[in-house]
Amino acid sequence: MPKRFFAILLVSACLCAPVRAQDAPAPFDGDLQRLAEILGSLHYLRGICGSNEGGKWRNEMQALIDAETPSGDRRARMIAGFNRGYNGFQQTYRTCTPAAMVAIRRYIDEGTKISRDLTARYAN
Image (cartoon, rainbow, N blue to C red; front, side):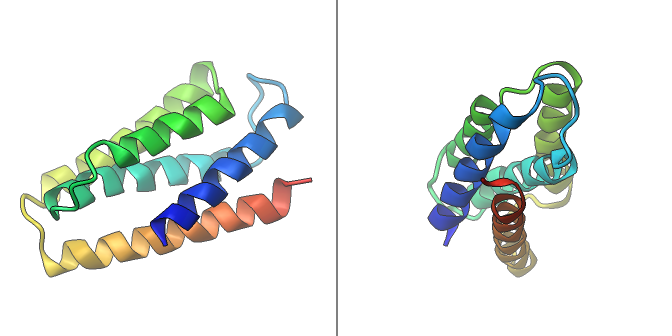
């Protein structure tokens, strides 16, 4: 399921990027910021839950930034979202717990939904 989630994510980001001016806020920026926060959360939670994925989720965030090519405030907001997701769980969880596993599943589901919605709404 996570591979499908990120395939959809990257396709939607690539399709959306050329449609607007680079510095202008896009109508989907809120969704992208939420997706960045989810990626940060997954980067931390999957790490403490022994997934052995290394920097996979951070790399997915980098791929999103590379595809979207935000600059200035847009870029800063996306990065801040990722860091907020990571730091929020870092302050709460030191080890993997059943609640952390539930959070992982919920974030994957939410990220998948956001990606699908973005693709449906903004893909040509």
